[in-house]
Image (cartoon, rainbow, N blue to C red; front, side, top):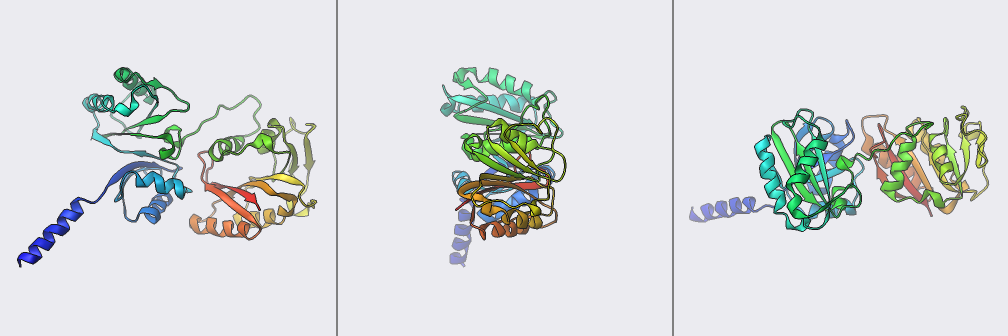
Length: 355
């Protein structure tokens, strides 16, 4: 009897000593369930509390805090766009903000460092003013750290989330958040004369994947109309062949570095190794897109780069992504990253290199 009691006590003690880490996790709207599934596959059981349905949730993981970014960086998720640690939690009130300021002022690793303050609010929040005003208030409270508060290239990020009934915060390295942008929301200013917002996808891919678009010589843009991606590549100095039966935007038609083929991609013939970059952002069935693009890969030089979007048209996106990746890998393409970028909607972006 005593042995059983001792064993029960030991088990209870072991349960109490289990490592636990908590994160606020963000995905594109509607894709949080798939981000949760990615966490389950990596870390086992995940306890989740929704903050914004389909988009933001608090995840409790039974692992050491340092293990989480290590695994996520080693096996980058597709749908989990951003995480921020929960090291401080309090009720949602102005008094809690005062306590948070004291807590952060004692984080000595922030002293004399470049620090970004990232503040977000829930759909309903106890903080009635803007996130920017809360950021400014916090910055004033933390003057004693003598930190260099910045937006770009911080050494540390202080993440704050003000919900209706709770206040969450944590301190982390930028790379451990999966994105150095607040909530993983990388925003660009729309330019005068910009053809489409699709251009933002390539701009984000350039930063997220570190693709040096200006280093490519000749690109093919499959399904190019009206020309959002083509315009981006032309701005980077790339010679572009744009394929689409629809018209390209009139501002592009006479560009000296642009060749327009008003045909379906299946009707086009290329020489081997004609291009060092292939891009495709077609609103089409993902498997048909993959079949079409793989049929043109002979035109991509070995070592060349391909960037394509995969439209998620049914209810099992993870299985679909796996199948599409297999189609490309069967044609000597090595997937570098599969990622749902902030500017992707019901789609992901595949970044690949031909070997």
